[in-house]
Image: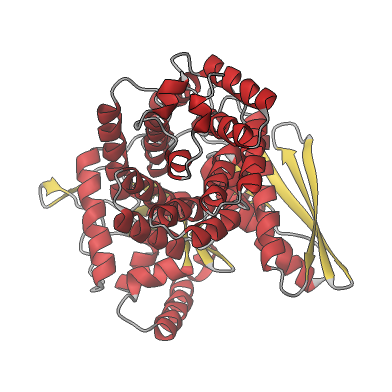
Amino acid sequence: MSLVLRLIGPIRLMAGGDQDITPRGAKARAVLVLLAMAPGRRMARVALQDKLYSESPGEQGAAALRQLLRDLRLALAGHAGVLESGPGWLALSGAVQVDLSPGASAGRPAEFAEGLDVADPEFDDWLRDLRLSLEDAGPAPPSPRLPVLAVFEPEGADDQARLLGAMLVHEASAKAAELIPSDMIPGAMLQGRPRGQSVHAICLGSGDQAIIMVMLRDLATGQQIMTQRHALPRKGSGPALRQALATLTYAIVQAALRFAAPDQPIFPLADLFSFTRQRLIRADERLERAPEIGEGALGLSMRAYLRYTLILERQTHDPEARLAEAEGFLHRARALAPGDATVLSLSALLRSWKRDVAGALDLSRLALRLCPDSDLARHVLSQALTDAGRDREALAMALRAGTGPMALIGQATWLLRRMVSQMRLGQLDHAEESAAAALAHAPDNRPSLRFLAALRYRRGDEAGTVDALSRLRALEPDFTLDLMASPDYPVTTLRRMGLLDVTRSGL
């Protein structure tokens, strides 16, 4: 039976077109609203608790949320399946159509979630900001024609292995669905042969390990795209599970991009994490041509990030204008998704660029609290810690940041962050290794060549220095050693460490 959640005017959850199954409680309806408007229709339980029970102590708030969800499922009765859950998260099923079409109430335009009164300051602030952002945005754009990501429940006789498999498959799929983007649906609801892919897992027990075999298939052809094997310890599986999550998320994203149709709106992830003007502008143009993703919270954040890169890499003639554009994009993104970790992380990055160390620390820590496994939040927090002179903490955070799916996509960027932290601690040999690894992942990245030229010259490797400088001159036509020595050239760490002797080498 089709379900429609109407959010303009009084909240209504309708089944079959005319059956009103809206829960009566204000907080129960607030759960539906929060999930419907969250990226990927999914929220961490702790984030949901913060919105609805912000004034209750931690355990008391958690208990109240558990009771609220039990009551909501009972109220939904046979439709309780619209609430999907897993370890630490809750989601609204993709089977629910969210209706944001304009309406009228008493002869005036209807308000978003009209009449909803939860009496929690965090929720009230979120609702007010969202109403304002919807007023500014005007009518909602039509839903994009997104591919499907059908996730089947894992199979296997070993209960513990199957539980770990479910955690792995659902978490990785949800992250991938946001990055592609795609519509994530339960495999049981799959009908026909839509465009997209499916995720299957077979889970086996083997001594103290759970063996998770994951298969990806192209839905249109039935072709198997990829198989991955993950061995997770039954106990204490945290680090191993995080690594498996990153690897599987990356594989799902790459498979989706490989089979993308020409007209499919997708995030140009490789170009977004590149370093050259041509690729960055190409990414921006693709997002601008696809407003259904480019005007969403993640798309706006990514458009701000690529402008940050253009400024940092001296790839724009008007850095002030690009900075203003980036701030404008992030302002709009925060209005759409005020609690989104990616939006907050990139807002923190701009604060770092503007030398607002306290603001960058606050925003990146908030992002990490809202999404504790966000590799981007850790990456930006490492930058903020470096700005604050807390170099050991910055390196520890940079090392932890390199294990997520976004870090796998933008490996050069994450390796460069590690390199800067290592240099600040005097670990110059390790820093050189990180710079060389970053260059191997992205031969067009200039920062690694700048650092390699300086570090190789320091240890007397003249041939290596010449190679780095010649490659840098090819990528940066106006490059000179005098320019590198100037105070505005982006080698702050080399300058601080007294490692700019290469600029007087005459090479």
